[in-house]
Structures are given as structure tokens and as C-alpha cells.
Image (cartoon, rainbow, N blue to C red; front, side):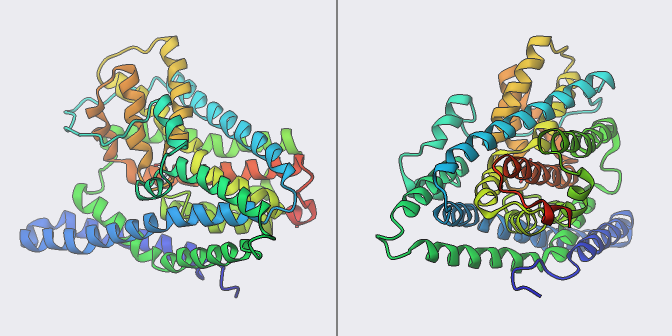
Length: 418
Ligand code: ASP
């Protein structure tokens, strides 16, 4: 087995970990009277919460170096720098388009199915959002301090710095004694770190699911059932319908082959809830299985992980409608248009880490004058939804990689169809 392959039986073990977490935690939750309260709380805090949080922290820990090294090593080793402009334009255009379609679809289905709001009390919630307005988002792309961007986890700034650094490294590679090789090696080390962390994913997911169930029992969806069901439906629709359509229409590729090969990537994204932590697996599958040449995948995949989030945009569209309905506000057509534009911008500004989409949702709500407190409502069900939308996010990155590669003559269709 290749040292850079995902851990063996990851899919099976993650699903087992999830199931075990739900079973054990619900057994404890529904037998609370038989267990001393102190013990119950201790298990919840020191087994499930602590384990889950450590797993999440480990994933977040590698996101910044992973994006930086994968972009720098990808761009610095491009054989044809002139092509970068054309690849970048197509990539960003397609990312914006798919996200626009995603959120529009969410709103259309929300409207058709008459998504209604929550009837119970709304828990107080204090959103922790930075400046995610359009102005703030653009400014974050251009930080005034390289180290500041890294310390603040400013992903847009880090992407910009990485591209700039990668281009400069590419152009000065001879002068610097082939320094791009060093970055490729460092990139390999970080890829390995993610894979090492992922060998603990079954335990991490066990703890995350357990802490979720121990706090609320199995009836977590309760009054949010319509929102949850509709969201999962639109995510599935976008994943299977929109991506099939664009793969066929723009690149004349067989979508079934695409889905079959993306299975493990989607599951990896599902287990990590982080598009960024999934970069190593997405890159490997897109290059080795879908036949996208490295010149394209090395740029399109890490950039996509950072800025392309169709699943997140779908959640934000439906969540906004849900919250508007909860507080009894009828959205106007102009406001629907506003949601589409805002969701495109915020999904670009959303970090590719667990739960980030709910943080940037505050911008959309704020712009429409909706109460930010209501985010607390959907947080209750966000753990699982985050897993599903992250899987959609990464499939979007891979689909766009194939389309851009095809249009640049950088797709090996023999490998794709193999
Ligand atoms: N977890 C998502 C991702 O990494 C972002 C989000 O929607 O919260 O792609």
C-alpha cells in the first residue's frame, strides 16, 4: 500500500464509529436515572466532548499548512505558467456559477415545499463573526501582514499569499537551486499528517456523534424535521443532478463513473466535515482516478476547497428562509435575489473547517435584518448536516476540476473511464 493512501477500511470503520457513538450515547441518555448525574456529565464531558474536540482541533491544525503547501507546491511546479491565467479564470467562473445554481435551487425548493419556521422558543446565541461583508471579504484576500494572515487563519489571504509565493517560486526556481522541490516534500509531509490524523477518525467520529446524542437524545431533529429533510433533499439533488448535468454538458463525461470514483472522497469529507482536510484525498482521486493532470488539479482542488462551497450555500439559503419564516417575515423577490448574491460571497469567505458555514450565515441574516440569535436553532442539527454538505462541497471541487481539465486538454479520459 502506498504511504499516501487513506487508512485501510476507513469508510467501514468511520460508519462503525458513528453507529457505536450513537448507540452508546443513546443507551446512556435514555437511562440517565440509573446513572449518577456526576458520572453522566463526566462521561459526556471527558469522553465524548473532549475526544470530539481533540479530533476537530487536529483537523483544524493542519488546514492552514495544507492549503499553503499544496498550492505553493502545485503552482511552483506548473510546467506551463501561461496557462495558469486561463485555468484560474475558468475555475473561478465555474465555482461562482455552481454556487449560484446551488443557492437558487435551495430557494426554489424551499418555496415550492413551503418551508415553515420553528414554533418553539429560540435559544439565545451570540454569533462570533468577523467582518464578512463584501468589502471585508475582498480586503481579507489582501492582508497587510503575511504572518498575520496565518495567525488569524485568514484562508482567503493565505490562498492569495500561496498563489503569489508559488508563482514567484516557479519563476525563480533555477535561481533558488530548485527550491520548489523542498515545498513539494513539505507538502508530502503534511499530506501524511492528515492521513495519520485520519487513522483516528473512527474514534473522533464516535466521540462527535456521542456528544451530540448525549446532549439531546435521538430526537435531535424534532421540530426541525422539515428543514433537515428539505436540506438533505436539495443537497442530494445538487450532487446528483446539477453535477451530472454540468459534467455531461461542459465536458461530455459520464457522471456515473464520476460518482463511483468519488465515493471515498465524499466519505472522507463526511468524516472530517472539512473540505480543507480532505484536500489530500480529493487531489489523489482527481489526479489518479479521474485523470485530471497535475497542472490543473494542483490549482483547482486547493482553491476549490477554500472558496467553493455549494453545500454550504444551499444550507445558508434554506436556513435564511427557515429563520425568516420562524420570525414571521415574508421575503420579497428582491430579498431572494439578495440571498443568492450574499450566499455566493459568504460561501467564498467561509473557512473549509467544521461548522464554519453557520458562522458566516450571520452575515446573510444581518444584511436582511433577521435576528442572528436564531442561528442557535439550526446549530442543534448542524453536526450531521455539516458532514453531508461538506461531502457535496468536495464533489463540486472535483467536478469543476474535470471540466476545467477537459477544456484545457489536460484530462486523460482513458484514466477517467478506466
Ligand atoms: N464544513 C464545511 C467545509 O469544510 C464548511 C461549512 O459549511 O461549515 O466544507
